[in-house]
Image (tube, rainbow, N blue to C red; front, side):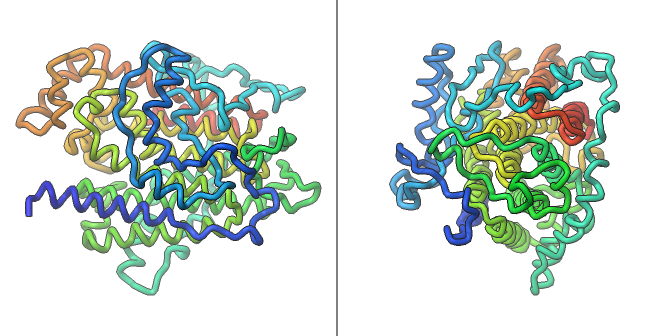
Length: 512
């Protein structure tokens, strides 16, 4: 069999296994919290991947209203037909819109547009949650801090990792037990990351800090009988409201912390699968799972982690959160398909790159952030939940862009994974795309995925010769980081919120 064909088939098998994990047993209405019943939707519901099928036409309509003609991004990834998808929906299915249609992907100078108001981004008032509450960081700009052009010290803000380190430790220890199985090899493979290399625990840290931050926000009154004002978990504590004083150790706190575990399990599963797809040798400074065992064991370990995450997700007893996080799983598949099937023209488009980055990285973070707000008693369309998702969207993109910059500037032993990995896979990230805007001779190389001899070396020489490419990539990361800060500043000031502000700075100034 042709080797290329064999690899492609293998990639689709793993993408299919990821998609299978999105078939989650959702708690029945009898067991769902009272406030979780979704409202009736007036228009036919569509899931995220189905929506992307018609995204080109809808985005064009929005663009015409906002900023004239929009680039043709080509067809977006679809893994099921509209007809088949319609059969799985009911009249009460939550209508989710991809975050890149809710929030801004690119600066206006680069052709980005400000999305129109719709359920999911409509509630973005910067004062409604802070009436009469002073905020010493109001109007914070990252460019005012050392390392980004300013003189202020980010160390004046709370350390995000130290703030939740003790809280996360019991959950980090128990997660190894949550993925135990009576099959020794599968169990060892599934526990591999959790026992020896915790990594940055970046995602659980975000969820834990976000849980604390939203506890400082009183729930907003229901604005009407619409689905976007559903989804909040019923808070079973005195007064029926989560506060900063009753949050720690509560059932709400436990479920939010468990969501952090779930997110980490999904993330680790995606890493295991990605390493098989990419034939990577190392991950987090050690051997990849498939190198220690085999491709078959690695795929099964990833599937098992996704299955366990799905069971734990259902036990959160919030159907809205289950739908949102299942969509995050679906997004991982969409990103893999988009990476495999992008046309040569799409490989040159910055917006296409950012959408792929959303699917593969930012979607899990932003959906986890909004879900944290729902578990804390806030409705899907509330100002609090909207700020949470917007923060996660921009934070996730800033994180990925910085990762892509480090792919060219950091050594493999610092990164914990092979340097120049993306180019080796035929992928072009922000630095190379900006270099291709400057040097036309790079464009054919990008379109053919650096397949010919000398392509990678030519691209690297052009990137290091460019006076603007790396700076533009850094500016794009800083644009998204600042937007993440702006979203956080809509929440009342608290130690946890300020720690998240510092974490945003850390994301775009880190060296590994």
